[in-house]
Every structure is written in C-alpha cells, then in structure tokens.
Image (cartoon, rainbow, N blue to C red; front, side, top):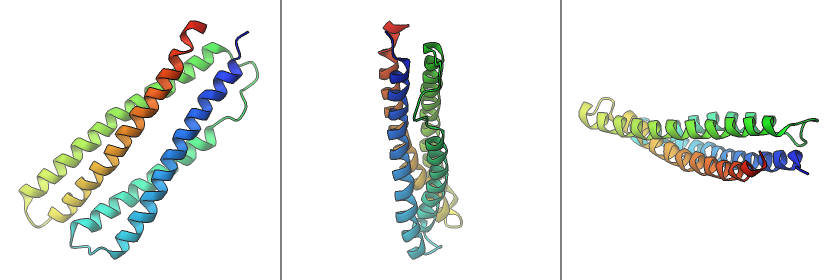
Length: 163
C-alpha cells in the first residue's frame, strides 16, 4: 500500500531543512553585514557591499519565514499521489527558475564591477560594492538553489515507479 502521507512528509522535511539553511544565511548576512556596515565609511566600496548584503539578508529572511510558515506538519486528508507530484514539480520548477535568476545576479555583479572601472571615481565605490555583494549572494544562492533542486529531483525520481 502506497503511503502518500509519508512521501509528503519527506518532501516537507526536505523543504524545511532547505529553508532553515536559507534562514541561517539570512541571519548571517544581517548580523555580519550590519556590524560591518556600521564600521564602514560611505566613501568606499565596503560600505555598499555590506549594505547590499544586509538588504539581501532582509529579503531572504522574508522568503525563509514565508516558506517556513507554509510548511505542513501533517498531510491534508485525502491527499492523492497526483496532487503530491504536482506540488513536487512546482517546487522543482521554482528552484530551477531561481537557479537561472542566480546566474543573472552573478552576471549583473560582473557588469556593475566592469561599469565601475569604466565610469571612474564618481560612482565606482557604489558599483564596485554592489557588484561584489551580487557575486557573494548570487554565488551562495546558485549553489543553494541547485542543491535543493537536485535533492527534490532525486526525491521525485524515486516516486516514478509508484505512479
């Protein structure tokens, strides 16, 4: 007998662990970035780097909290395998889309840093700092989203014989 509730629970646990990692990353950005931002001078790139990391920390905190609040601790009654597979595919597609966005963040970081070199002194510290922060955030999120997508996909592939 197929235990759809157990499959759903395993999927929710995987998502919960992933969201905990995202929440820890967000907290790290808020604490470290906030501390270093207060010590940085606005005239130099580290000020903008740490400021951007604090901003990313806020956004990631909201996303992690929203995701954690949406987690189910028990499966809804009458959950069918088709509904579970649809939710699984939705999550896989979401993390795959985010992986593509992460590549865009990295490329934007390269663009901003190249632009800083071309424009000269006026905006260079801001562009340089923002570009570096996009490298850090985009790099972490690229690895995070790709790993979570891989884990979800691996988990979902195990269900194929059950369908």
